[in-house]
Image (cartoon, rainbow, N blue to C red):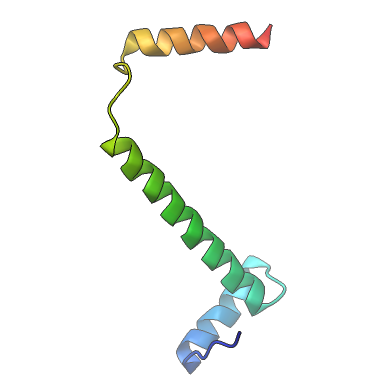
Length: 75
């Protein structure tokens, strides 16, 4: 796959590669794509959570029970 960039964008990408320690511009672009994909997946999960019916209220009792469960798992 080839991507055409304006000179300004190419300069920006080259600077990011240099500053952030990427080996190539392809590595930088791949990272951007991965972050975008992860962001879209997170958004999808958040929207699904908002659309779902809560199973139990998330209050102090909920967090107390969660802490107790975690403490029990560490033993």
